[in-house]
Each structure stands twice: as C-alpha cells, then as structure tokens.
Length: 242
Image 1 (cartoon, rainbow, N blue to C red):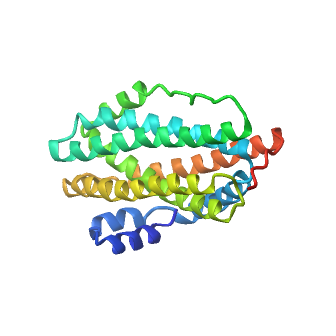
Image 2: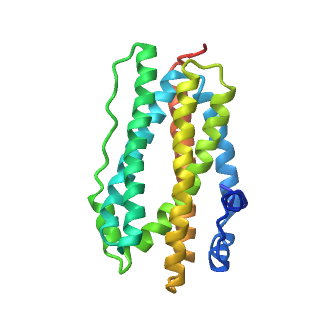
Image 3: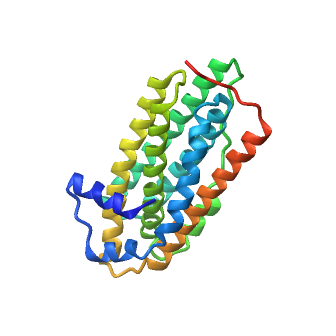
C-alpha cells in the first residue's frame, strides 16, 4: 500500500492529517509493500477466472471480517463514549462484510453446483486479552485497524479492477458487493484516522507499533499470495466465463 494514495483520498474528502500523523506514516517502509501488492494483483487476475479460487479466498475474507468484528466490538467497551460509538459502528460493518463475502462464495458454489461451505471461525479471546493488557487498549486497537483498513482499501481496489476486466459470471453482483465494502472501508480509514489522531494528541507514540503492523500486513499479503499459489498448483481451474 502507498501512503500517498491515502493522502489523495484524504484530500478528496476534506480530511487534514496532522503533522504528527504524517510523520508517523511517512516513516513506514513503503517500497516493500509495493512488491507484495504487485504479486497480489497477479493472483487476483488469476483468481477471478477460477470459481473454486474465488470460493476459497472469499470464505477466508468472511472468516477474517467476522474475527475483526468480534475484536473491535469487544475493545469498543474500553473506549470513551464518543470513540466507542465509532468503534461499535465499525464492528457492525465488519460483521456485515463477513455475511457479504460468504454470500458471494455461496453464489459461486451454486453456479458450480457445489455444496455451500460454512466459513471457519477463529477464536478471538486471546487477541482481545492481548489488547486489554495494554493501558490504552482502544488506542492500540485504533492504530492496528487503521493500518489494516489501509491495506483493505488497496486490496478491494485491486479486486474491483480485476472483476471489471474479467469475463466472469455474476460480474454485476460481485462488483456491487465489493464496491459497497470498499465504500465502508474508506469510512473506516477516516474514522480510525480520527481515533489515531486522538491518541497522538494525547502524547502516545505509535511509530514502532505502526511500523510493526505495517510489516505484519505486508507479510500477510505474501502469505495470501503463497496460499493462492498453492491452491492453483493443487486444484484444476474451474472457469466461470459468461
């Protein structure tokens, strides 16, 4: 992900990031993320020509969106009322996204005449407890999910471009859903930016945490590329041309 693109997004919606915020994100190792996203783009192009691959990836999205919803919802309880309201809304959106990704996987299962698959559930108690062990749990969460939403913005943008150019069935349904999720993620970037600004104004230092989150999500991109490559190498393609 490229922070300059996020700044352009901020300009479009009229959000002004503080100098402290800019110093924080300008310090991140951007070039490494560019490489990961380039590899991700290649797997996405291949994925949207293969119904089985779409099911595999979108069920993973459903799992992670539900996990995020549970974690954010739990940590919202530790925030002041004005910040808690934003986090609760965010949690609800993530839960809705989980259902949307699952529904798209179901569409592809039905098209391929597969039995529908229930997404895996991830135990979140340990992650929640880890955040709660910090003195300012909701502030740490704001930093973590802000970086995550930046990553999601670029992934969803890439999905939209791949779907638009793919001669796939149910294109309109997929485009509509993914665009809706992206619109939500833009709101989440802005809401978590505001939360992070509150933390930074309180004198919290997040340079190391933001860098660690950034690199963790960069590694996760590579992991997803590897998982998809493994899927492609072990499963025959299931073309879904119109």
